[in-house]
Amino acid sequence: MKPLGLLDRLIFILLYKIKEKFFEKFLMYILIIDTITIVITSSYDSSTIMIFILSLGLLLTEYFFISNDFKNGFERYERYLELKEKRLAK
Image (tube, rainbow, N blue to C red; front, side):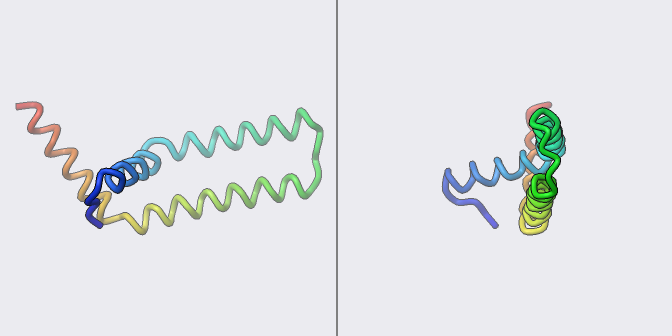
């Protein structure tokens, strides 16, 4: 995939940032917020726990779909960032 327009480039960079830096923290925050919500509201229903597990599973599959679908593009973008850093260092 070669992002041609400005919007395409911005979406690609956003997906790259989510994949590289934000996703692990994002999942941890969701886990903490859902756990606190369940404890505060004392709703230990099986439906609440199942909804949490399903939403977490959906987020994990989206992460893997993003990683697999954009694998070549992300590798090219990483090489571009490395070259950009080398040029700035000179």
